[in-house]
Length: 281
Image 1 (cartoon, rainbow, N blue to C red):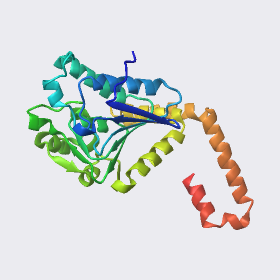
Image 2: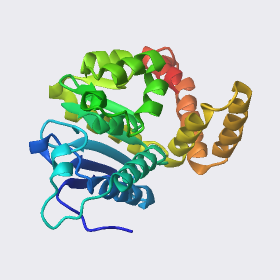
Image 3: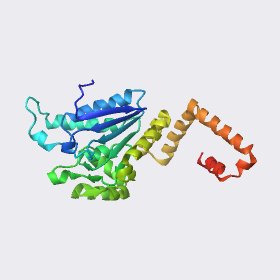
Image 4: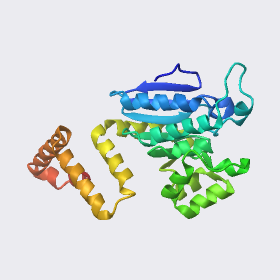
């Protein structure tokens, strides 16, 4: 059920792209206990809304998310009933699962700190775009806590068990360049180009066929537990489904029309541009 929106999470919609911004910059966008359930509701709303095609998760004020707001947890506001640890962790679990299981593509736009639960929120997204001033850390061990927010599952699959141990057991801060080299980050850009790159990537995703993206996400998620033969079988079923869909037929017709125009014009047929375009397709 949709709950009343707070000012701690800001939602902006434009041309099918939904930007969800954590909005507590004075606390480096640390998560209040109640924000997990609110974020989950927002993600569910994006998933259900036909006009929403891409979710971009980011933070305001030069930080992504510094994890849980420990001070707020220890000293809740007057009149606020504190969540039990069990309830809080259940809300965290639901949020991460909802984000990870979306059929629509998700992008984490990380500028500045992504620590603890904030780091793992980013890793639960399909793509992670980081500015060169981003920092990532599994800071839990420094607080005497074990890793949570899905980190024990996400990290080994993204960067391997050895590197996952390094981040979790040492709690070290990893800069954007090393995060990219490790495989935590899919895109690394200069801070001056950060917003333009996020917009460009989100735009490309929003223009792609939603049904194709959803199927590809499902294939990649299922493949982790399949043999190669089983994965090939799933791909066959999915591809046969796509081949009968209108968007694939339209793309094929457009390609054939371009190909016919190219081969009917001898001068164009030998040009580098024409050949390059055909190879891309």
